[in-house]
Image (tube, rainbow, N blue to C red; front, side, top):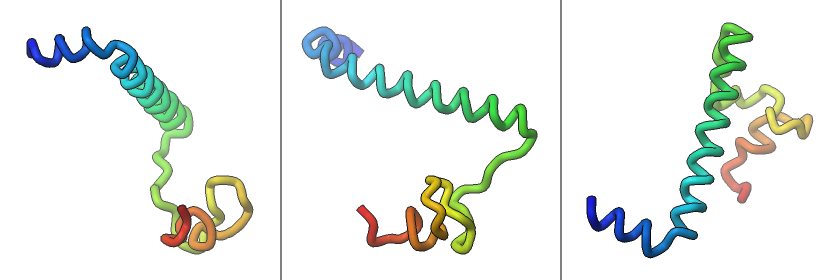
Length: 71
């Protein structure tokens, strides 16, 4: 535990970024939980291959975000 505390004290800028990312992640989870509460259902992931992609491109999932060759 002392090593971790020393690392945080010696590199506050790096740990600050990590903590901000974690806070943002938990904020997204909270928003998702609220949406599930309102809708009363959970959205399955990943979408079926022939469903429209959820990124909003209008193409099928398999030819968009579900394509393994995409970066």
